[in-house]
Image 1 (cartoon, rainbow, N blue to C red):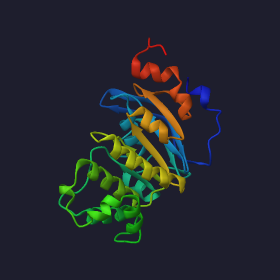
Image 2 (cartoon, helix red, strand yellow; image 1 turned 90 degrees about the vertical axis):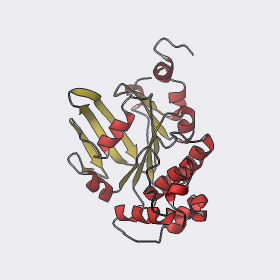
Image 3 (cartoon, rainbow, N blue to C red; image 1 turned 180 degrees about the vertical axis):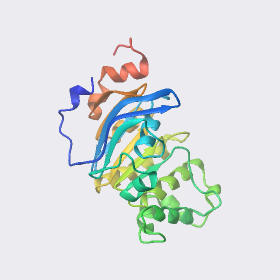
Amino acid sequence: MSAESTQTHERPSEAILRVRDLVVAYGKAEVVHGLSFEVRTGEFVVMLGRNGAGKSTSLCAASALISKRSGSIEFAGSDMSGASSSAMVQAGLIHVLEGHRVFHALSVEENLMLGTWASGRRGDRSRLDRIYALFPELAEKRHQLAARLSGGQQQILAVGAGVIADPRLLVLDEPSAGLAPMVITRILDAVAALCREGMAILLVEQMVETALRFADYAYLIETGRIVGEGRPQEIRDSEALRSVYLGHHATA
């Protein structure tokens, strides 16, 4: 299945993020080659691909966490091609990076409260109850140091600190890395509930079947290019998926 073959499929609402012709290079080595994708309001979008395919690099460039060589980025109807990462955050894009990134010396609740700085509502405790309802394990450990949490609990805390900022688009980069399947399902169940309430989700993931179970739409990336896109069942049945994960000569 080619990218072109699915572009006519209707997707709901307006695009909250639209990336066009993105090129990213590290020094002279170009690693993302004219990649284009979009996420619609209230849509759960996943990016799939093997290690080194350019998934995380593409997301970091779209979030302005790293520089791009060329391409355009539109967020919430505004041209953000030259925007800083802080400007993207203020506009409503929150990017939760891979790797359980929390402040170990702070308590669970202090980590969550730091997330309110991103939304411009520093110290606003009004969303704590919502986070604790989504992630009861955080409520139970609210006064515990983050350093004492398990790896899975730290990842849940990192996601909670992103969610408390009330983003228009929540970007999750490989939240399953090193975690038990039960933990990643807990995280994705929670963010899927937020998606149903209108928050857009963009997920980079290597656990293909798990990601597709939650997705509304998926992009398949190989060597810095999109080689397929479509609804979850279209991706599951595609030759592009078999090619990327099993090799170009794989058969069904």
